[in-house]
Amino acid sequence: MRISSLISYAGGFKETVKEIQILEKAGLDVVWVPEAYSFDAPSAMGYLAANTERVTIASGILPIYSRTPSLLAMTAAGIDYLSDGRCMLGLGASGPQVIEGFHGVPYQAPVARMREIVEICRMVWRRDRVQHLGRHYQIPLPQNLGTGLGKPLKIINHPVRDEIPIAVASLGDTSVEMTAELADAWLPAFYTADAAKAVWGDALAKGKAKRDPHRAPLEVFAGGAVAIGKGLEHLRNLSRPQTALYVGGMGARSKNFYNDIFTKSGYAREAKIIQDLYLAGEKKAAEAAIPDEYLARNSLIGDEGFVRERVIALKESGVTSLNVGFLGNNFEERVASCEKLRNIVDSI
Image 1 (cartoon, rainbow, N blue to C red):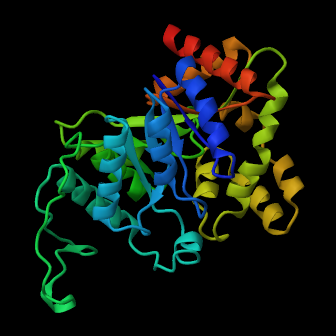
Image 2: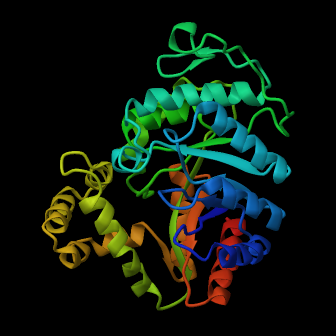
């Protein structure tokens, strides 16, 4: 199993990269670079390419509405060149609050758009002349929609690889099915080994049934926060604020994918309570309503035996790569957590 981690978009990026350099030596395999409505991810990915040697540099994630499909492909090809073939293009739909509120673009047909984007990106990397007449993207632009001067072009440079791995962050049944059919990797949220089959089993099975048999199996990234040692269980509570935010306050009451996942994971009553409390402004009460059992299942925090059991459970549920966040009061503790996790993973 590979080990991946998401870096923060909140600041201190240059300092974080120094830590990534050490984590790379300690066993980290993949770095996810986020892009919300902060600094753009590709700039940071290029900086990482120049300052790391081995880790895969993945966008985690680039929203599909803020760039044309051809530009997404060009960006990934450029980072792949700078990193000597270490780029992974992570894509996601984001949400209407960001796409319409920050980018000013209509949030429409995310699954259908993603399908077309994947096709166009792979066309660019093969150096085909880009010709795509889809419902959402027409390349070249038809004559009646522009000047009429557009013509099929192929990327000037020769990409390092004619296929760059595409990871998709998806949650809903339709989008997960599409991910299992077309993508190289899947980045789910609120994944627990115990509930994965109930939440996503049918969608994954349907997608895999349509998958090109010549394409490698879907890589699945999931895990949680990591702190390995005795007496560390209290650190599981650190995820309460974010869990309450997503389950309780992300999206509208009637349309919250995270709340739906929490419900399908066996916590229907708690999901409603958390949402009611959070939307009423009682955030601390919403945090307190999150079951301790869930926090344990959604983390790799505990003694070595507990963490080993959770890693095995994740692997048996279909996870191929761990996606984790290392906890610690300082850099040395976080690196030590990475080393311990690497040893556990390698021994399984």
